[in-house]
Image (tube, rainbow, N blue to C red; front, top):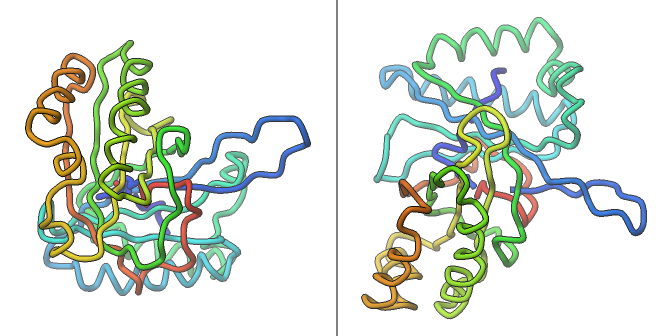
Length: 259
């Protein structure tokens, strides 16, 4: 199966991640995941879901720990799908995929070929989870999310991280947010791009307003936007929903199912 994801819709995400073995007194390696953003031919969208179900089953049988599939929920491209999967070690890409391990080379190739005919565009990102910029533990009940894709100006990432830690995180906690996921693109796209993920129970919960707006008010939001001027060059927000039928397991709490 093709590696599917931008977590797009992410995503970003989707935005997600794993624990790594580490010797005592040594820092843990960065938590990694793939995010594939897939745009599907509208006429084949239902069939694409069937093929992705086969792909998920093959991945699970092949030992892949988890998979999250996110789709646009009303606001965004309705035929875009984001798939997030774990990367335990980047060296895993030297060997056979989980799909091949689970279904065998012939069946995995057939799944891949069927899916490819339905895809109009696909981009695969390697993401690094940034739990130092987020907080909290993901609740299994959080199926609706706002995925923000943030482009940071070259040379301004330290300033961006300072604003996130000093302004955004305290405001979100003040608003009662219990989980905020952050990840950054390492390969496959703009390395100055970040994905953030906020979870909601439903649209009624979302309708209460963005947590930052609730915590800061109009003046506080204006001040935050001023501080980000020249740092964040573009911010896109999409509303996404977890597709339980095409997912299994749950991304560890430090990761985007965080675009």
